[in-house]
Length: 463
Ligand code: URP
Ligand code: ZN
Ligand code: ZN
Image (cartoon, rainbow, N blue to C red):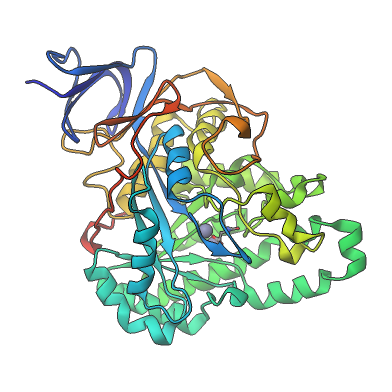
């Protein structure tokens, strides 16, 4: 058998474990996995002394998102280049309808943002922001190849907030169609009250960005997770809790899963490696995101949830803002553009703090970053595993070699990093996307615009 490309001599992380093997690629697909593959006429990528893992899927990103009075600073060009450097070969963004837009318009808007710019493959979750207007458009979006939807329980001022009636109705539709609803779970009314109580000139002078955390105690997320789970249990509609940040959330999801509720949980890597002590820093406002960073004990509970199974996916919620954009807060914690850069450091952080930190095995890391997100999001027949017939999306990583995070040398448009100065292993020495080398020797070499939109079906959504 001949191959167009052979990835030679790596420790290959397959669904059956880590094996010393070559990966033979024919065109865009993996054609063979095994020792001593013939490289006759093939381009050879030397993976000796490295792990070869499946390309990572970051199933929660916001590229070029109009939000908080500005637009998130990584677009499909810089965002996908950043992802590729961290071994990410697929992103799933959120298409959010602008005022008056249908769900289909939202998908068209996001396709236009990605087309011609993305280095890696992509698709979108479709955001239902105005239930009465959008409810009858959901089925058509499933038919268009978008089987995952999203509702926000906060963000009234953005025009995105869904109430219980919308959540309940959408989950009924998810059940009927076999689709899945992603939910941003924070309890809006009590949160608004707590923000109002903390929003005084005196407290803002005294406590600055700490107020962001102080106004969002853990019960703000826990109550909302509990309520979303209740609607999933009542309707049978499939629910996916995005960016879960609390130990309480993990406990609620675990108990619900034991009862047979169809709920899946995602956390983000920042909730695993950072905590709310950052808000006491001079530049603490840079770290503001929703939900906000929590306590070290929450991080430890989430790591445990990843090991034990109630937390299925690690993503980033990439929503990049530069220092200048973050400066829009001018000392008022309610005006901080919410979100952080993340795509470039997802896998390095998970590898360094998870695998090298003794919290996850390399196989577990690949399940949480690759196999599970692919299966859950309906891409398990193409993405997320190294096996014959799958897309040749691969990352080659050195087991120990560390790079120091330096925003000046990164692909993201952010001029800062939450991890600046951290020494991280796990940056991709080589990244392949559908057989193309897009990162070589830690540098992006792929052609922008080569990334493809991924059609998905409800039948492919897994657990
Ligand atoms: O702070 C965040 N997370 N920004 C992006 C929007 C969201 O809630 O996911
Ligand atoms: Zn959110
Ligand atoms: Zn998000």
